Length: 79
Image (cartoon, rainbow, N blue to C red; front, side, top):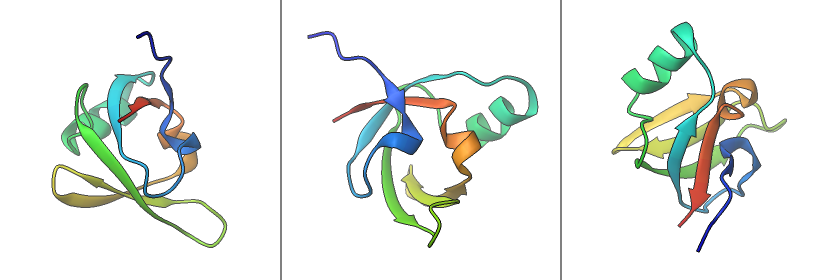
């Protein structure tokens, strides 16, 4: 089964996914890697702010907040 990755910002709240790639570089990529957003990591969207930016995600037991422009660079596949 060949599933096409989608941006993290496009998946509905409460739907678990697995990180398949990061499309950013530089400081933004380093920050995501430092937060534990690496290939194969399970990520759970938890909450969205009233206007949808930022959103809270559960990653490796920690809750992190990402702006939409950052989460657009995290490609995931649904679990």
